[in-house]
Amino acid sequence: MSVALAEVGSIASEEESEILEYKKSTAQLKAAAETLCAFLNADGGKVVIGVAPKRKILGQQVADKTRNDIGCMLRKFEPPAPITVEYKPLENSDKNLIVLRAAPARETRPYTYDNRPYRRVETTTSVMPQELYNRLLLERSSAYHRWENMPATGADISQLDQEEILRTARLSIQAGRLPESAATNAPDLLNRFGLRKEGKLLNAAVVLFSTEFLPEYPQCQLRMARFKGTDKTEFIDNQQITGHGFQLLNEAMVFLRRHLPVAGRVQPGLFERVDEPLFPLVALREALVNAICHRDYSRPGGSVSLAIYDDRLEIWSDGTLPYDINVEDLKHEHTSHLRNPLIAGVLFKRKLVESWGRGTQMIVDLCVKAGHPEPEFVEQAGSVGVRFLPSGYIAPHRVALNLTPRQREILQILAGGKTPLRHIVKELVNPPSEAAVRADLSRLKNLGLADNNEKRGMGALWFLGQNSPN
Image (tube, rainbow, N blue to C red; front, side):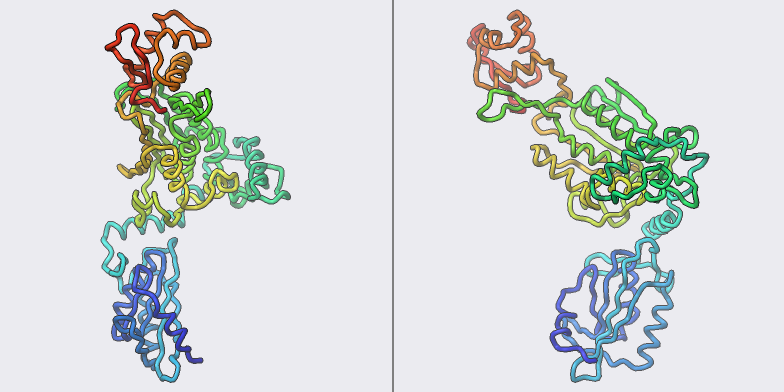
């Protein structure tokens, strides 16, 4: 059946891109195969033969030799490639368009054509660098032998947190991501979650629900620190906790609430001050969930790390980004690559993961909405981290003010405008001595949260400083 003119125009309607290339004839079959190899090593694509430059449709005569040449070409791919061939006869012509489609095949890449790997960058096909080829080989090996999918060493159901398993099922049902008819006993739920194989627990089950980790699973660890200053020289608080993923997430959120400073603001038209954590807790939780979900658990000495400094907050996990995603891509829409699909699947059912590939964008959006700079995503030394930077707390000591309730009350009073010391004392709920209030004001002034008109001496008026979040 011939292809109508409208359909022909549709086939050749797009510009060449990372997923589309045109070739004039099968004389360029070798170049077409190299591009198909590059598509297989990315997200798929198609090559249309019979289209000249500027998308001029010429067609191609298809003889037995043409089909044999294409068949020989396909046999030169390793591993065998998921490429389909369509011959589309042109209307009122003895010629065809030949459409070669390479399907996405991430778990079986890298592909080679005639013993060489290729990659696509925008509209250019080139030989893949050796380092990148080796990395894809490792990814292919891990896809077949993922750590999370291996039998758990020395673990059985009695070592799992039965209550957490049932809680996960209940929350998954409430989220509409597990049917109400789901089993109510741990073994059947583990089977439903894909965490058992032939009656044996998988490593993913240990990460998500185990209560015993040492000595086999030291990597199920969370490291948390509140540093004094902007480096790791001195600790204010330092903790290392071993536990299952949900326990580590809860412990991290408790640590954040304990050590994050409270940023206060006065709502317009109200006399009440609203105290909120410096960074949106939802964004921090999302970053922690990502770290638990996507980290490389095959490293026995690995962990998730949470570090609070005087000028920033950082969350790190072991593992590298997929080769075709860089840290800047994380701020925009990007393809989701699941290092641990079993673990990710349970977190998704429990509604800790909303949608694949959107978590990092949500982190950025929440921080910007809260008035902060965009977080920085970092990849270094085999780890991936996200760095949260505050707005209005740029000096090194701003992130952990640890103000007393009375000092926060004073800031609330100053939010109403310039106020003399005696009026500040009078407006406090439980007024202390003027000396005590003066000491509080002095500290607030040193922090840049309050200031006064010193030219007026003892009768100086106090007001909010330049570093106040109001």
